[in-house]
Image (cartoon, rainbow, N blue to C red; front, top):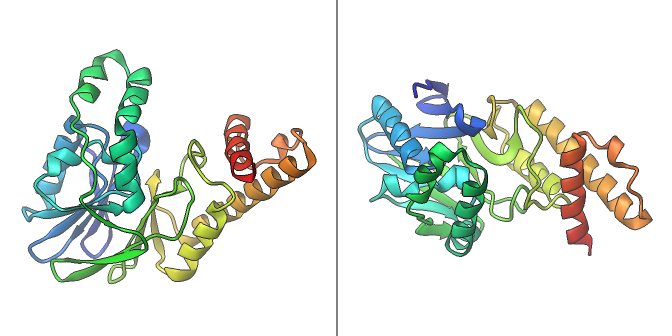
Length: 264
């Protein structure tokens, strides 16, 4: 694996991986660095560590954007280190990590099953519920929780001195947002709060190409449309609204299902 790093701000890097099109972030300070998400296995994390070491030899702090397997299954390989995440992220990994492993084993290619079976599930040991600030080698890096969206534990990494925001899966590029365990009725407001609080021009999505504020605002508007259509479908008992959703039918049906669970 030889995916390159892209420097999107002063000593702030993104590595976009072919595997699930995942973005990992790296913030480099003086004598310390921060790694944002750790990929989907020990083997993928080992590749990531080698890539980090091509940029910096310094010790790291790890941050998990949220509790989905493709973002935290590599945590153990970064120990010993502080691992930060939302309190709900840590709880979800402790209570549901094995269920996620079983789910991945249900669809991963046969030749990768051993790679998933060997994973040591490690949850964040440093948590917060609203905000936290980390000192990364003299650089203030902020962790923010703006509300429910893609999950109930999505956090945003804000690097103010570089003008960069790592939005995790609150923002998706190259594919529609994922609604599997989402909160469609809350997601638009969460995005609005993030955009209002963080004026930075560079936004790194959890998957896909780096985007700007206009892209994120456009996706926020799409999510608002999803919430409005799903609410109308629930109130009026209509299912023929699916064709009006800004996403493919299978994605729209999943969004409706999750929205109905909220409304019921």
